[in-house]
Image 1 (cartoon, rainbow, N blue to C red):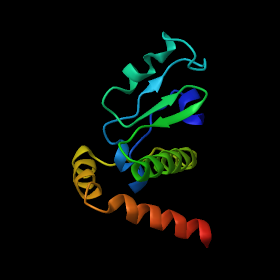
Image 2 (cartoon, one colour):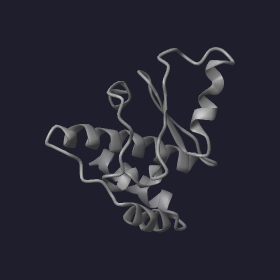
Image 3 (cartoon, rainbow, N blue to C red):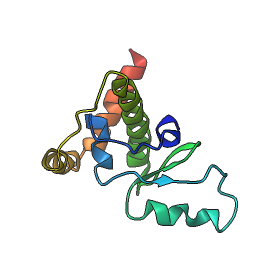
Image 4 (tube, rainbow, N blue to C red):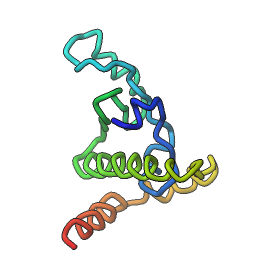
Length: 125
């Protein structure tokens, strides 16, 4: 929510941002999605896996529950780090080549489960 009202996009600066390397568009309306016209948020999403609703927060899409859960956690973690780091100075983001290489590694079999196991272990500790 904070990133969207500042007019910022989600940046790939940490590993949790890798799933969003193709970009996270901002749906530029503060209204709740209650009409067909506002339903155009799907057009804003396009072929990406996340969209930020200005003043409301993020929405993620995936083909299975594990990936959906991971993307939701990753989007929030990425935004939090971005907000905290921006207070210290300019962000050092992944280059296109670094992001592309990381996306390939991130797509390996079992990656979602490894990340979810890690997130669960953090919550339990």
